[in-house]
Structures are given as structure tokens and as C-alpha cells.
Image (cartoon, rainbow, N blue to C red):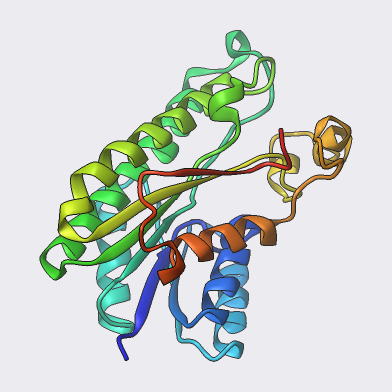
Length: 246
């Protein structure tokens, strides 16, 4: 039986960590990509191994081409040919109006969320196309269609770019046997809110969600796992919203 080997960027926490663990439970060997916290990444890798799968941790910045190349090279050397990619790494910067966001933050958000996603998708496509198979799942955001005024319109704009990338790349790679989809989470209870300067944001926004709760990282991981599974064999170019109805 062919081994499933999946690269998960931003895999050391939140949605990425939950996705690593869920994919391990589904039989994937996992490369945990991370940018800073090696202890957190190794903890996720231990969870993957506890589920019976193999794991490797690779530190790198997805907006840096050499780091992306190394991420995939280490994965292939340690785990085998890459069959899947979850493009999860993303940043937001502090919450606030666009007029108040400094240029360095704007550049960083675009570099990680757009360029990083493009670099990883390109590297995966170069590996998967000659093999005639593969699955890419991009993590978008409900913000892409809501616009997120007063919070992070710059982040929302980058996620709209991810949606367009998903659609175009699905059409481009479909004839090569590669499926490309996206998951668009809504308000998910992760530490990202604290990083944005508002640790209570998820709980406060729950009342505006039709299901009356914030989502959990596992809710998103379940959607990713389905899109990567044979059950989704005829699904490509889709953006699956996991946002509690918001």
C-alpha cells in the first residue's frame, strides 16, 4: 500500500497542529513545518508518532524560497515522496483599521499568506506532476468573503488571493491527477487571537455565529482530512467553509 506523506506548514500550533494529528490518525506520515517554536513542533510530532505514523519537524519560513525547498527536501529524504500539502502557515498582524497598519506588517502578511502559499504550492506541483497524483489543501478564511473591516482587511485580502489560487491551480493541475481545494475557517478558538492582541475575541464573537459557538481546530482538521481522502476523489477547486454558518 502506497504511503501517504503530507507536509503541513504552520504545524506546531492551532489548526496546523490539529491537522497533523488528524492526518496521522488517517494514516498519513507528517512533516511538521514550523517557524519558531521547536518544542511545540516536536510535541506535535510525538503525537503523530503516538498515532502510529512517522513524523519529521522542519524549521523554516514559508516566504523564503530556500526554506521551502529544504522543507520538501527533508520530507522526501526522511519520509518518502510527498503526496500531500496543507498550506496552513499564515499571519495577521495586530487587529486594527488599515490606515493604522504599518508597512512592515502589510509586507509580512502578504509575504507569508500569499507568497509563502504560492512557493509551497509550486514546490508541491513540481514534485507531484511527474508522479501523476497528489492533493493540496490551502487554508483560507471566512474573512476572504467578509472583508473584516476594522480588524484586518489586509489579511482578508490575502485569503481572497488564496481562494483564487485554489480555483486556478485546481484547473491547471487537474489533468495531471492533482486535486487542489481550500478550507475557509470562521472564528476558531486558537492562540492566534492573543497574537492579534485580543485573546478573548473568539468567545466574544461566538454570539454572532449562527451555531452560537466558536469553532475548534479539530473542526477544521476534519474538513482537511476529508478533502485529502479518497472520499473527496471528485472534489477539486472547492472552498469548503467551516464557519458555523457565518
